[in-house]
Image (tube, rainbow over all chains, first blue to last red):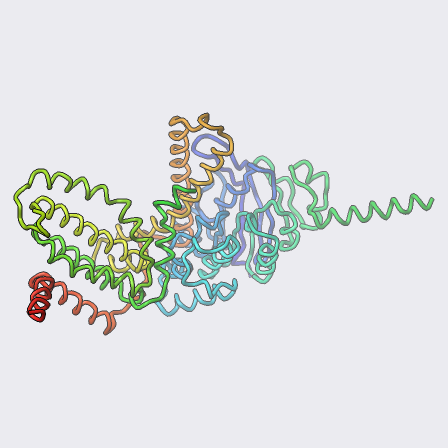
Length: 259
Length: 269
């Protein structure tokens, strides 16, 4: 399967005010891969994501999705393939009720009323929010909002999921539910997050960005245990791995005492 | 915040509109239409006709009781806007001093009667408008407006207003709270601070609007939003329209209070 390959070749991007955010990013993401995107604040993660579905177009270099180069003309087509989940659910959910919000995408894709209805129900079922369908978004909890935000994108049946900080503002249990949900999806996933445990849990590959360039790209287990690399990028070992270190440390201490 | 809790408790009316009663279940188009016609009838009364207005109280009272809406909530809001009506009519008793009738030996001038009729009209129309909102979900109203052929762009504006009103209110209160936490007494509450707060709010709103627009584009937005049709006209809706408009017509053309009075007088004799 080669049709959902996402490829970036030497992507540069600068904002209209002159801030250079991306300075030559290249990578290839294969079908079904899940990739975590980490980096310090202001490293360019969000800008990079915005370049993946044509919200921004690279000032230099190319983005191509399934062999189609992303440009002004193909932007609409590519948006059907790339589902984008925004950082703040309040921006993502703009329709008056949950149902209508989830129906917004499929309706714009031109499906019939019945097809839209079916897709909405399936998507809400998937995230466990079918019972909320007639509620207005301002009456949902933060966890429910982010689940519904995912449903709005899933209803469009995208091939690639792009997420910006999906777990920010979630309580631990909602976060765990989100992680389990993400693990279930077989889509190609690109998740930008500071939550390195989430990346470790969900993604097999991790890319670290520093000052608009790729600082590291490899298996998540490897990268997220590289203390020096993480340190250079304002990151820390994932909490779950910190415990391992503590335990090793304690074990070593115990050994010392025996000596 | 008291500001929120006291007067502009929008969330409260919104809460009421989620109830499930006969009035709430009526088609919003029907409620909108009947309320509009009701207001037209009330306003059409001549200025000295006070007794003719009294039977019209039946409509707001009906909405209030059948809709299970607490009187206090509505009364408070009516009272809050009442100064407008008071000032419109306050000089009538001074300007118009012709005695129209005497009650228990006290002469009552035309000015007092027209003043009272302004107040009664005010109470009738404003309470009906508030009750309409309390007994109809905002979405229902928007749907009704669209299906009564209000241009779509206005309806969509209203929908976004409803969606983001709460988000923006929350943001405003967060900012005010942050300000209060760091201002002591008068210091920090100068008008200058408020101007800055408002400008920041504006900038944030514009940024939010941009993000929302991006989110819409990401989901295939091409300039058109479909508003869901939730309601269908049912038999009881038609009954409601016909009976209420019929009743209003009756009240307008026959002075029920007068007729009742005559009947009582005749039976006493």
